[in-house]
Length: 248
Length: 371
Image (cartoon, rainbow over all chains, first blue to last red; front, side, top):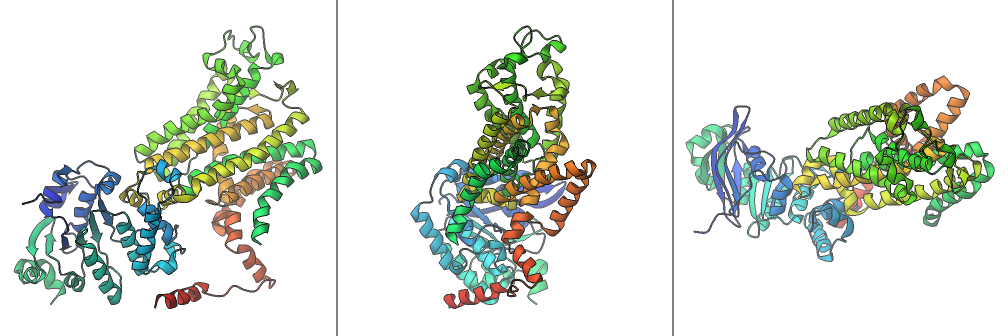
């Protein structure tokens, strides 16, 4: 049995006595694609906050490649190889699509390198490839702020891939997308799995089905159950807390 | 058209260097020299506020440090200013007989030339690093810089025995290269020096705001948290630009001091530092060209209004600021660049009206390319 890539052990997060996560343990193996669902307030976003260093766990350990992430700054964790896409597509609105990507793809992320170094050709090619892949090549010189919502989502995903992380954490990648865009995003994510380890947080059941990945259900900051979607859907506890409201 | 655009800066430089001295009298020319000196401060503020989103209300500190550095050197090296012990006369008023230790290195012109930008840069770097490292942002940053400004103001104001307190240091009666600093000839040279240094300051700011470093600054302004998650540490970026801005303000303060003839703690008054921000807002944030226009225009206006109706200026300045914030959020230059001028002409029927939704056509061609 190899060591898991990312491991959360007994993690609790409390905000002034309110527990957003309670004794959550979860492991991620290399190349795995995992989706996480759960009703509002289940702690899905806090779960990502803990991994990416935005929130410090009150209790428990987070280890990545056997190294603790607790207490590291956001940028350190990002450089370790954990990338995150936010719930709302946060792109740098006043930069063009091209420049958003060029910033993310920068191999050395220190201020000094950014001032002195030219972007290597390989990185430029990668930017072009990503832009074409997500269909944003015609908008290379468009300000990211004037893109449509769906385009912003894709730009956000593309910038994340440009960072070349080992683990991609995607918070609601298809929120507000059309059906067609959703299908395409699912394809994109599936193509990323294998090379990358991907965690997807989503409400959209169609999309989760498209991903065809094992599902983890969170409820009130605790792990409710894990398994393939069909099995999870049949679980009476899940139906009670989550699917009962949306799938009947 | 491209060629014309490329020539514009050179033409402006030529006008400032040769035509203005020919048509303006000594007094007016000196005023323009001051405006251009202040424009360097405006550039510095644009670098940290316009691009990086750091609204500093304490740039007066660095401005004054530059001014004091040059004034101390001039005081020391002028024989007519020396009192009994060979140290500047004003010390006698307070019974100081020995030159304070920190004055000593300012005997050297070389040291002074370096110190006038290096000391502000070091102070800015240290203050900036401590603030940024602790993730102090937004309004809190502004408040802290203003508080720091007050600390410096009260220190300089209260220390007669060290730097002549509230009286400041007078440079107009000092000598440089055997010439009186306040003399028209010397002032002409200082004017020329300012006109040459302003484009240099502009190019320095351009260097920091173009390329991926500049993109990172804009990213810090727009969404710093997101930049952290991209793997960048914003602290060095902010510290570097704050340090560079401090150095530029030091140069600006030194040039302003020698052309005004005095440096005093008044340079560090709260209103002074806020006015600096107003120049940038009026000219146009995040454009570099705008702040130069803003600083020159507002100060020129200030001279005109103050000469005609001295008590009216503050009202005019307030009205100007409100006007710009409400009607021209991108400042004069931003308004001009975004086709504001054309809109104005169109309103009077001189230019054709802009098409509605020009973006729609662009998207249509883009979509065609896609399919």
